[in-house]
Image (cartoon, rainbow, N blue to C red; front, top):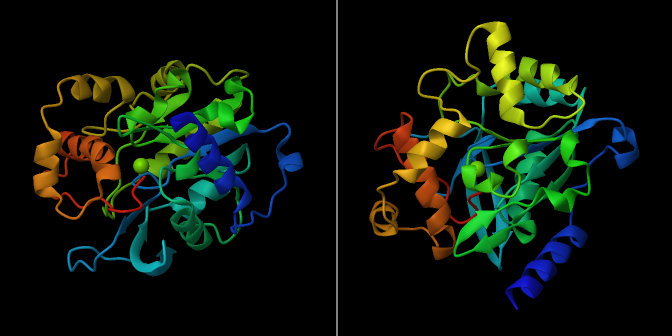
Length: 275
Ligand SMILES: [Mg+2]
């Protein structure tokens, strides 16, 4: 029954899209594929006005008959990142957020229509409340795909394709997307992008530095930290009163990594549409 529901949600999402990308698949026949998560990877959104959060736009999203105000801020250097990456990659969004939310965000951040497609919540698999993103849905060669997400759970089905990016909340100094540009250029020359981490290590050797510095951790380090996760769902619920139960498991991971990195008690993840 769960499998049937997943299939239904996937195809419902695919055929009810309103966000129309400008590029056709034919344009990308020889390009590599860059799959990007949305929340805390490219944007940060909140669902209540917050004096400590400087939003750049308010999006109105209607979900199940109710209108939500989404306070959005894009990660620094996003426009330049999309422009540069689109030279070598087809760009696809894969988010656990709902379709209506994803479309509104893409309308705002992709005015030049550099993103060719998106897969939203209906294309994700939820097992015991944990969200998994299966790249086989894309119908591309796995050797051509790099998948960047701030949640290591997302890589469960595609460990060799995954690159973990530090979560973005609202820092003006965040330069992760800027640093990714030369790495993606370096990677695009490889016949097989897998394993991403091996290419990352050789890139870091070349430049004599790590891609994400200091407390911005790599996949292996974050996975180790995850094994030691001491936060229970109860702890998360106490901190986040207004979350929906669908998001509890995901928020647990997000909250954990925010604490592991640098955010401390500044926990302000998105709520209903979080991905
Ligand atoms: Mg995310």
